[in-house]
Every structure is written in C-alpha cells, then in structure tokens.
Length: 551
Ligand SMILES: *[C@@H]1O[C@H](CO)[C@@H](O)[C@H](O)[C@H]1NC(C)=O
Ligand SMILES: *[C@@H]1O[C@H](CO)[C@@H](O)[C@H](O)[C@H]1NC(C)=O
Ligand SMILES: *[C@@H]1O[C@H](CO)[C@@H](O)[C@H](O)[C@H]1NC(C)=O
Ligand SMILES: *[C@@H]1O[C@H](CO)[C@@H](O)[C@H](O)[C@H]1NC(C)=O
Ligand SMILES: *[C@@H]1O[C@H](CO)[C@@H](O)[C@H](O)[C@H]1NC(C)=O
Image 1 (cartoon, protein in one colour):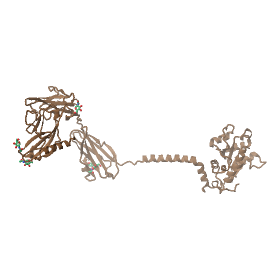
Image 2: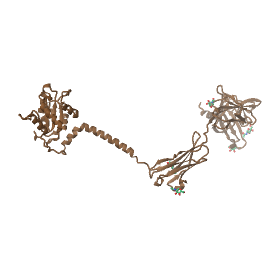
Image 3: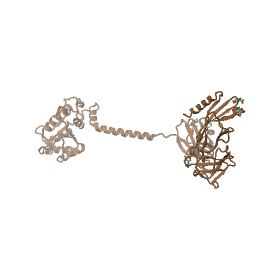
Image 4: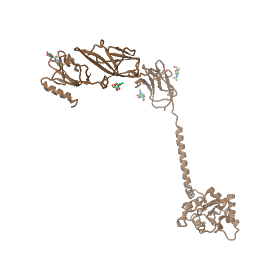
C-alpha cells in the first residue's frame, strides 16, 4: 500500500465510523516526529488551535482508529493535555497518529507520523537522524543539545556529552558545558565529528534517558586580508574609436564590505565627464565558496572618443589600505605583420608552383611563344643554315634518322634549313674548309650519336672533330646532342662531347622509324625544336603548315 493512499484510506474509515460528524481533513503534517527506541517522546498537535476560539477539545487517535488514546498517565502511550506521550517509544510505534480538534459545531483533523529508530550497530546514535551544525573554525564554538525543554528544565538538568560515543572530559579546558550547550574552545578540523548529548529524565517515578546526535563540521574561515585589485593591472588596452567599452574593476577581499570607484585626474569619472556617454555603475558584491568576497564596478563608455586615449583611469578601493590600479586606452595597432606573412607565403607558393610549371612546360611554352605572332621572323644575322647536322657514318638506323627523319620533320614540316654532312657537301671541296665555313654559316650544330663500332667512331672523323673543337672553343654556335640509342659508355667519346653532355644533357631518340615518329608534336621533336632557333618560315606555325620555301 502506498504511503499516499494510506492516510486517505484512514480518513475514509474514520468518516465511515463517524457518519454524523463532518470533520475537515488537513492531511498529513510534513514534519515528522522522531524518537530513539526506548526513549520518551512527546508529540504536539500540528493543527492551529487558535481558529477554534475557545471551548474546544483536542483528541488523539492511534492509526486513525476510532479508539482514542488513553488518558491514563500510567499507560505507556497516553494523552496528557494536548500532547500524546510515549514513555518510552518502541520501534512498532512507528505509525500515523490523528489529532482531532472539535468545538460544539465544528471539527478539524490532521495526521502526524512518528518514526522510531534503532541506533546503528555499535553506535549510540543513528546516522540517518542527525542534527547538523557547521561552523567556521575560530576561537570557540557552541553546540546545542536540541529539543529538551518539553522534558527537562535545562537549567537544572545534568547533560552528558559524547564524541563518537566516547564521553567527553567536561572538566578539561577544551570544553565548557552550560545548560543544554557545549562550548568547544580553539576549534580546529579535529573537532569535527558526531556528538551526542544525553540527559536522564524521570516520569511517574520511572527513569528514562533522552539523547540527541549532532553532526558537527567546520569550515576554515579565510584570513582577513587586504583588498586586492585583480583588474585593472596598470595595463594598456586597445580599443577602436567609436566603439562601446565596459571597464570592470574587480576587487578580491574578505571581511568588511569595501567601496570602489573609478577616477581620472584625482576626480571621480562621472564627475569628470559629467556626460551620459560615460556611466559609472553601482558596485556589485558576491561571496565566493571559499569565504572570500568579490566586488566589481563597471565603467561604461557608450562610444570611445579621441580624448579618452592615453588617460590613466584608476580603480581605487576605499579601505584601511587604499589600493589603486589603472588602465590606459590605446588605438589598436594595425596588424601589418599577419598580412605580410600571409602575402609572402602566397608569393613563395606561387613562385614554387610557377618554377615547377615552367620546368615541366618550358618546351611547350617556348614553342607556343615562337608560334605566336610576337616573334620577329627573318632574323638578319647573315647565316644560311639553321643547323649543321653531324653524325658518324653508316649504320642503317643512323642513315634512316639523319637522311630521312631529320629532313622530313625539320625541313619539310617545320621549315628549317639544314646542312647535312654526307648529303649536302659538293664533291671535291676541301673538307676542313667546307666544314669550317658551313658551320660558321649555321645557327646550330646538331651532333647525332650512336653506339658506333670502332672503325666508324666519331673521333675517327678527324677533320669533323677539329672543326667541332674549333667551333666550340670559339663558342660561336650552340650544340644539340642527340642520342640515337642509349649510350652507356662515354669513356671513348671526345672530351668536347662529354663536356656538352654534362653541361646541357642530350636528347634521346626513343621512337620507332614509323609514321607516328614523324610528328613534330612528339616530345622528342618538341625538345629538338626547343633547342633549335625559331623557324624562319612564315607558314611554319607549330610545324602544322608545310612550307616549301626552304626545301
Ligand atoms: C467552532 O469553530 C468554528 C471554526 O473556527 C467557529 O467558526 C465556531 O464559531 C466555533 N464554535 C464555537 C461554539 O465556538
Ligand atoms: C470536551 O470534553 C468534555 C469532557 O469530556 C465535555 O464535557 C465537553 O462537552 C467537550 N466539549 C466539546 C466542545 O466537545
Ligand atoms: C558522523 O555521521 C555522519 C552521518 O551523519 C557520517 O557520515 C560520518 O562518517 C560520521 N563520522 C564519524 C567520525 O563516524
Ligand atoms: C555596462 O556594461 C556591462 C557589460 O557590457 C553591462 O552588463 C551593463 O548593463 C552596462 N551598464 C550600463 C549602465 O550601460
Ligand atoms: C587635472 O586636474 C588639475 C587640477 O584639478 C587640472 O588643473 C588639470 O587641468 C586636469 N587635467 C586634465 C587633463 O583634465
């Protein structure tokens, strides 16, 4: 049966047995009565007697039954005056008791719960039924043994005190007992604990004991210290002209309330400004959990003006010591630094990307530029040939490349004019003169290398070689090295070739001797064209158009 239903049912039973009487029901009193098993307890009626005026009777009923509590003072439970008395209370007295007040015409009624508890195992009290007492540590504190007045005359009674159920030596300097009070001197945290007080009580020539338990704890009171201004801190504050600003002075203190003000030039700010633009708010006070206090006071500028800058606004505390601290307003620094860093990061990034892009696309970029109309063609440098082609003699691939592919792509498709040694020299000319003269009339020297056998190695062509050295030494001409196949061993190559290879690298032919290798748009030909001078032909844009001029 639920606790809420229980009183209701009691009431119904009551009403059923008192059909004639209408009694106004006030339900259950919120306050419960507590008693320790074996100790006396008195309960007074929770109802307000005053409303019944005069001539009324108070009657107690056990558990809502119609049998009223005995008036026999020898009975363990009896009514005496308006009180119901238990001498002593027993565990099974835990029950609802109905107090009914009647006059000749009217009746009111309320239930009261009594809880009888047993002491905890091995203790002189029950941990659930404690009076609480919390005190700051200080020189001395007093604990009271509560609710004894109904039972004994506290002025005469002898009250014993216990801590954790051990009797206290009340003759020592530490304790002082008076009436129902116990005074502890020099209270420290060690004095925390559960205290019990005990008094003997006589009723109808019988001895009883009444005890109370008090859970006493201490709090350390913060030392009274001089007020400390936590803000401002003689600091500078950046603020934009025209903006709203609220300055808060914050003071930490303990003890008596302090007064704080904002001042400028030894004058209260609101007196100085005398202007609704600057408002000094009332101070606010707050208590911190550790016992310290905080006082704050706002100084509000609805709009910062030029005159407010570079002024020392003081927060001053009026107390036995008078701490003060100021804040100065400054224009905010324009943050160029962040901008510059960002700018340079972007610049470096863009540069790196550009360098990478140029490295990758340099050939295409140059070729595209050459094919644009900005390039001046028909350079008048007195040269006849775009390139002088030099190669070791006679392997099938070498001949295919030098005599077929090179002319097809560079001459026919791109419009270059080539001098190919082995094709264009006239019979009977003196070799050295011819080479020297022709090279000097050429814009480039193209040397095609292959894995040649010993009898037709390049260095065997003594005259070509002399001319080449000569050309290189005089640095009149740019050299383009083409490897027709991968040459792993350069040890037998002339120093000049090694030098050029190391300086500018070689272009390696990877193509087959097929149709697709004849497109000037393959990487190989693009790289060759990149090293070649711009084409002179008017219609050789990107080598798409065939020009017949030079062929
Ligand atoms: C009884 O109590 C009621 C309620 O307060 C009051 O109105 C009434 O006058 C009382 N009757 C007498 C006879 O006192
Ligand atoms: C109160 O109780 C006394 C004694 O029982 C009785 O004489 C008296 O009539 C009662 N008064 C009322 C108002 O019920
Ligand atoms: C005192 O009683 C409280 C409960 O009221 C309990 O938590 C605490 O442990 C007790 N103190 C001692 C020292 O037994
Ligand atoms: C002052 O500024 C504070 C913080 O912005 C604000 O809470 C307060 O209402 C302002 N007081 C007045 C009077 O404007
Ligand atoms: C500060 O106060 C002094 C004396 O009252 C006054 O002469 C002076 O002009 C004030 N300065 C400012 C900036 O208001």
